[in-house]
Amino acid sequence: MLNKAGRACLVKFVTTTISVYIMQLHHIPTNVCNMLDKIARSFLWGNDDVSRTWNHVNWHIVTTLIRYRGLGIREARIINDSLLGKLLWSVVHHKEKL
Image (cartoon, rainbow, N blue to C red; front, side, top):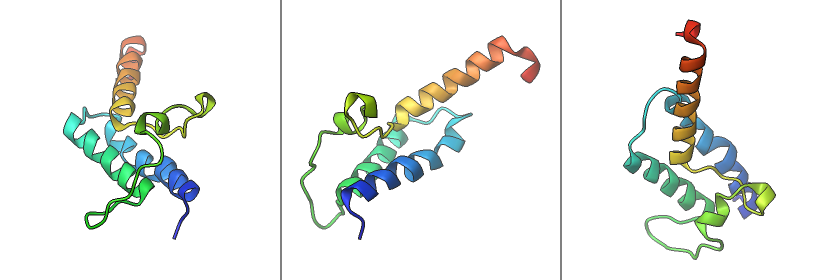
């Protein structure tokens, strides 16, 4: 019952942030990240297994930052890599945190 803007907000603030808890410490396989992105795409465009709808915008534009005229939805692989990089930087520069 949501319109496209409501679905975009829900994907941006719920589905991409649920997996961040696990991604902070673990390297998620590429297949799992692709599946998370597929679920987000399917929900955003209203696809299901029975019927298929047209995607209105390219996924690359959807994942572009808002200031560059995208929707700002983050890809799972990029989130995972950035969180692990942040953890590595923190361990290297703040050894007492370990």
